[in-house]
Length: 507
Image (cartoon, rainbow, N blue to C red):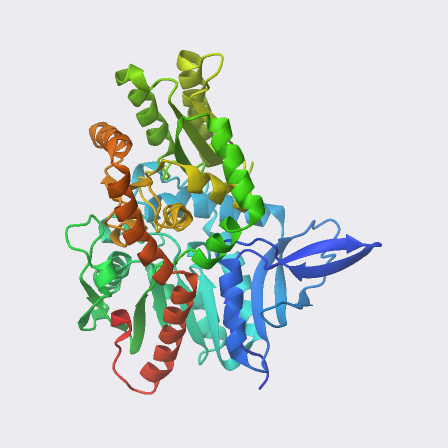
C-alpha cells in the first residue's frame, strides 16, 4: 500500500532537533505530559505500516527552506515520518496569532466582545490550510485516515476531500464549540461548517459541544440530524451547566453522513502516580511543606488568557484577605500564569492585569516573613507541579470557559484520594465529569467568595471522600481510555461506510 494508513495533522512537531558535532539529529519529544505522546500511541496499531505526522516549521524566505521536509523519527511508539510544512513567520503570525487567536478563539469561547475582524487575512488562513491538506494528501494512503486537530486547521477537510475524495477524515476539537447564535458572528461560518461536514467524524470533548455543532450544521446549511442516542452517564449528570443527556449520532448533508464523536481527554494518571512515588519527589514534597511553614496553600494554574479566569481567581483571593483578616499570614497563593508568546499581543492586557493584581495584593498585605502571592510566569516543571498539587490544600480552577481543563484532573490525580479541595468553574468542560468538586460560577464574586470560604472550612474527612470519588473517575477515564474510545470511533467510520447505522455517541 502506497502511503500511510494514518496521518495525524497537528501544528506541533512530535520531535526535537538536537545538533551533535555539527549534525542535526531528530529524537522523540521528551515532554512527559500533554497530548502529543498519546497521539503518537496511535501508531502502535498500524503493525508493519508506518504512520505519518504533519506539522509546520518556520523558515526565512530570504534563505529558502533549509531543512529536510520529511524526516523519519525512531520512537518507542514505532518509527514514523514527520512532514514539516514550511511557513514564513509572516504566515504564522497571520493565520495563527491573528486569525486563530483574535477572531476564532473568542468566538469558540463565547466572548464575541473580544472578537477582532479588522486584522484578519482570511486568504492567508485558506492558503496555510490548503498547504496542510496538500502535505497530508502526499502522506496518506488512498484509503487511509487523516486525523486533524483543532480549529486553526478548520479548512483542511475542505481541501483534502477535493484532493483525495475517498480518504477518511476525522477532526477533533480541543476547544469548546458554541451554539449558532455565537458561531454565526464569524463571517466565514458557512465555509467552516461546510469544511467540517467534509469529514467522516467530528469529535468533541463534551456532548454539549457536539450538539452545538449539529445545531450549527442544521440551521446554517440545512443538514439533518440523525437519531439522538444517550451519552456515557459520566457525562450526563443532570443539573450541570454543560450537561447534555443525549446527542445526535450523526448529521447528514448533501449525501454524506458525518459521525459526531464525544470523548473528553483524560490526564496521564499513571504517570502522575509514578512521578509522585519517586524518592526524589517525596523529598521535594517535604521541602515544599517546610517552606510553607504550616501555612495553607491555594493553587491556581493556567495560561495567560482572558478565558482562564486567572484575574477572577486572584481578585477572589484578594477579597478573602480583605474580609477575613485572621487568615493573613496563614494562607498563601501560588499562581502560575504561563506567558503567551510575544507575538500574541491579544493577551498583553491580561498579563498586565494579572501582574498588577499580584503587585497590589503583595503591596497591601506582605510582611517580613509572608508574601501572600507567588506568581510564576513560566511553566513549572511537571515533577515539581505535581509535588505542589500533592501538598496543596485547595486548587482554584475557575475558567470563564474552557473546552476541558487538564489542570483540575492532574490536581485530583496528584491528591490520590488524600484531603484537598478542588474549586472548579461550572464552565470548565471537565466539570460534568467531576460533580464532586466544589463548583463555582466565576462570573459571580459572591459564588467565588463562598467557594473559597467553604473550601477552607471543609473537614478533612469530607475533602478526602470527595477527592477519592474524583480520583476514581480520573483514573478510569484517563488518556489511555480516551485513546481507546477514539479508536472505537475510527472503527465506526468503517462500519458506517459499510452501511451500518451510526451509534458512536453512545460509547
